[in-house]
Image 1 (cartoon, rainbow, N blue to C red):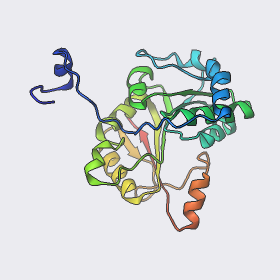
Image 2 (cartoon, rainbow, N blue to C red):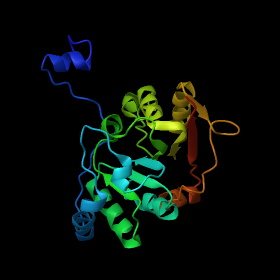
Image 3 (cartoon, rainbow, N blue to C red):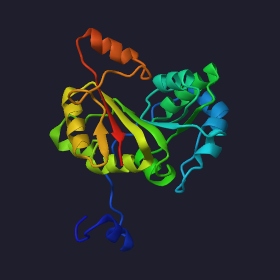
Image 4 (cartoon, one colour):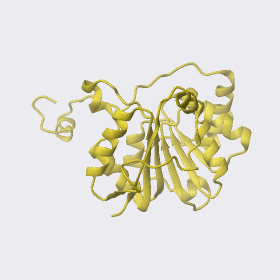
Length: 239
């Protein structure tokens, strides 16, 4: 940032400062099915990014507890969760367009109506579009762990992000993380245990058993057969 003391100061001077993102955008190529799903279902299930808060009841056509998932990949587990919990509203955020298309295709095939999707940076969506105190649960499953130490600053789970999530959760709402890389699980626990306004819901230690609502993915099953572990962490907003 050079001579500027803050991002705001740089912007005020008309200088653009690149920001580190918590993901790498992979455009990929849409299959015909994904392209059709985007064309068919985006008008009713897609939400365009805008820098103003969403009216969540209007967005879903009803008032119900809202679950947000960041980085849903190809969306199979998100669609399964929405299908199996019709009493909840689900909002999935993903930057990979083929994944958005695949998610919409599966949701359309199952007739899932309590799911909306966005194709945008999740941090910006949380900051500008999700009303404070509005979420029942925020899900972050298998985010990029950025293995190399010099890349740890790119990890989405940071103290600033934990505080942002806390402001968006209702009191009693939960932040559910899962990872298949133990050092990242330990890092997540370290960040979250130090974050004010949360309590770890684990009965002992830092990790919880996989809740029934989180489906086991094919990737996860394959890893378990190879002896790989998966760690779930759930923190509740207490204040």
